[in-house]
Image (tube, rainbow, N blue to C red; front, side, top):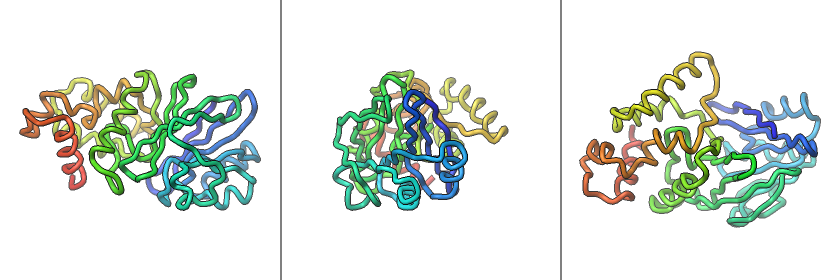
Length: 253
């Protein structure tokens, strides 16, 4: 499987997937038509599938034009069928599907939106998380509850540690500053800072990241860390209370 990152809008990432066995081509969260079409038209001249993690405009903005040009099929969450433009195939939580010969599973991860899903391939060791889990961060809670978002990021956290995470935005540098503020003694985070700065200086994406790496460095997955609880003056708080406080602080950071 080949994965190509397509920068879109200000800080969005769309992901172009090619199954080398069947030559099936798919795109995840096409934010806008032109940058996606430029690559698709140049390399493949075809687009079989369009997958949407959620309905926000910066993840579905290219749906209509791409489908019209390439006669693609659009996959999205069944309960969001009225909000995802041109949807054809309705997915449910836990449903398995294929991109050519590649096996994927739908994971329902509400919180950012009420109909947010991730696409996970155990065989390929990749998960596309949209706006739920970022490198060193997590998404804002718009339509769901903090408990839903907490449960959703823990679903992702429970995946194999060698799973690569492809998220919807390049937010890593701002997330890094937040993590360092409340987890300054985290040596794993300090090492990751060096990697992030090097990639940024070379104008490279900081994505993908890894589940195992995020467990060690992403403060939103470290709600049970005594150092984090101490920095928040929440030593006796529950994990959910710590997560909620972190999310509130990040909203105004």
